[in-house]
Length: 161
Image (tube, rainbow, N blue to C red; front, top):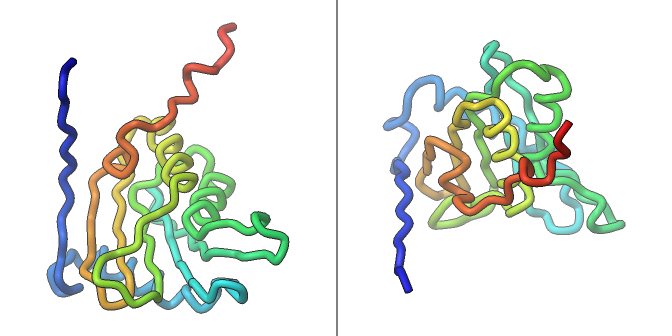
């Protein structure tokens, strides 16, 4: 038997004042967008945005549906819209925030992590992740891979030509 250890590195900021002006602006845009979330069942609102390599910003919010699980998380709404609008443009950063009171940022679900990691792998460049909840510090990760280190790799099921 071999025991192994996995470590990830991320930055924690106590307040917006510690962040770059670009990241502050992105967080504020996501905060302004949270009112567009459709969460009548859970009242758990999430806003997300993708900063694209062409400097475009694509917004998303969670969209619930009474016919659960027909809704969609904010992260996937933003990422799918970004890649639909700009299929050949890289996603540089994704900001994800909730209006929930929490002592730590709430993290994306496994499905969102997997989708984002597939885009990161396809573009061959890391996607930075910024997480924030109401009252929490801000967490900043350099890669989606830090949130999902043992991800499923779809390349194993690709058919060979």
